[in-house]
Image (tube, rainbow, N blue to C red; front, side, top):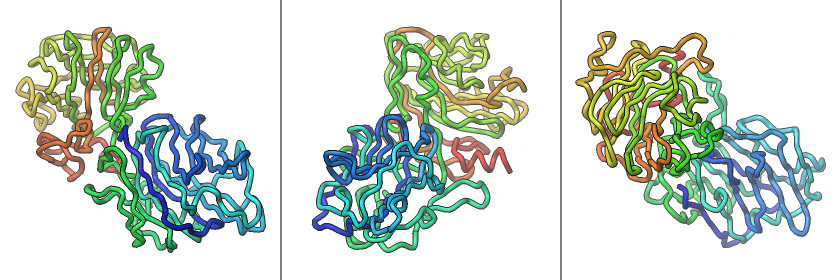
Amino acid sequence: MASTYLTRTPASAGNRKTFTISFWLKRSDLNYFYFSGGSGSGVYFDSSNRVEYFEYSGGYIAQLTTNYQFKDLSAWYHVVVTYNSTEATASDRIKIWINGVQQTSFAFSTYPPLNFDSLVYNTTSPQTISSGNPLNGYLSHIHFIDGTAYDASYFGETDATTGIWKPITEPSVTYGSQGYFLKFENSGSMGTDSSGNANNFTVNGSLTQTVDTPSNVFATLNPLASLPNTGVSTFTNGNTTSQGTNSSYVNGGSTLMMSSGKWYTEMKYVATSADSRCIIGITKDVSEISRINQDTGSNNTFYRSFNGNKNVQGSDSSYANSWTTGDIIGIALDLDNEKLYFSKNGVWQNSGDPTSGASGTGAITGFTTPASTVNGGYFFFSGSDSNAQNNTVSWNFGNGYFGTTPVSSATTDESGLGIFEYTVPSGYYALCTKNINEQEYD
């Protein structure tokens, strides 16, 4: 998605006094995101990670900016903005909801005059949905309502089991002539309007359909975990691809943590530096993902590329085959029995059998989660054990892609979730919130 944005130029104007914007966004970085109606104004995640609605023309005609900052790159945010300049009370003319909660604390608040026609929305100016210049993130369920101000309860609801705010997939709303609903359900035409109005958007760049949704969030790499390092990696493709720098040992760790159950994921070694010194494994301290040398970390257990050795919390020994560019490494983590298995291109190394349970045939053992561990669980991670590396890796946590390349075989996990290159061992699950709820909190 890193070179993508959506555009539409309406053929005619709609109701410029009353409208609603609703969308779900999972950010991949802390750059701008904007849902613009033209002239650079609209709904933004600003440079301070606040949500803002503004209209500017020689000065702020309207500006509402939250005090709260929204920096979580692992979560979906539901943003609803209503504009209704016909309201007698000025503070009712623009309202913002985040994940179903109306925002009432603002850093800036300027409301439009009574019955003021928006200069931004329902005009014939081009509309753009993007992030910075290109889009780098995930989008779902974008609604624009022409002529009605709906609150967040029309588009989302609290899940009775998890307590998480989730989308209403078919809301009972009237879109008006210039309204639209982008579901992104047609992989061949991602800008299709599902409101019945045929107000379709043009996709500029390459928009990839994903199984990561507000109702079931899949793990990605977490760029924030590597920020303390002196050489921060570059994250792309919705934070599933990472390239190390010459001063970094870091490729990144997963956004979601595992504390019990059985988990499966895959990583493709896309590009290697001269000596091919990449490592992949698990860490029980997310702060160690940002260490200058992950090789020394007592909280890490991993598999080396260049010699095939294993390293269990600082102790190195022989294990299996080496691996290099183009190879796909699978991880099966059995936390119920404290066993760890790696596969290379679908073959379990050291004659491992992830379904062997407590006997742990061919498993890596000896890693534990002491009670003193702050996080109380494990994260998947990859990196390098040598400085001056430019290793590039692409993870498939179940989204079905290595970077922008779809997997060829499309197998699923035990619960029928995720899309993987190789067969998922029986009893193992993709790292996503639905599986975490079922595996760890039943």
